[in-house]
Each structure stands twice: as C-alpha cells, then as structure tokens.
Image (cartoon, rainbow, N blue to C red; front, top):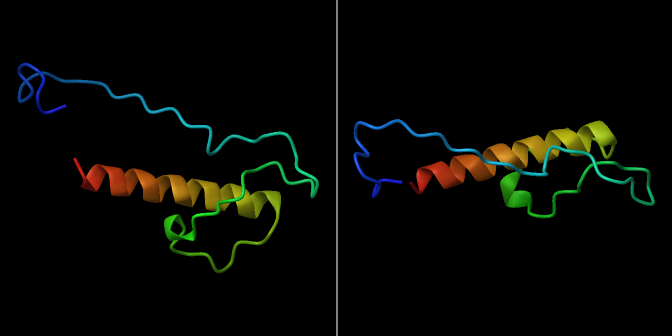
Length: 74
C-alpha cells in the first residue's frame, strides 16, 4: 500500500471480507458458528459458554485479534 503512486496524498479504500462472523450449517451439536481452534486469537477465553452466542462472541474476538495483529505489521 505504501508503494502506490502518491501514497501520501491520495486516499484509498480497503475492503476486507471474511466468513468468520457469519453462521454456517449447524453441526451435530446444533452449533451454527465456527469453533475457534487457535486460542491465541482469543485473549479472553473465560466466560464464553459453549453455545451459539458464545461461539459468535469468540469468532468476533478472534477476528478483532487477527485484524489488530495484521495492522501492527503494516
């Protein structure tokens, strides 16, 4: 992004699409949200119940963590 012409003065738009906060076909346990396997993306793992709501909250927190880590590398 920094190598584009007139990077200092020209605005840009960045679109980032992810399936993370979207529901999927329920699994055998009836859960409609992805289960986050990489716990390093979820700093606050305590307090999330093993429910659809809990999985949704973990997905959003993992997405926030991933975006924060990515922006630190820019």
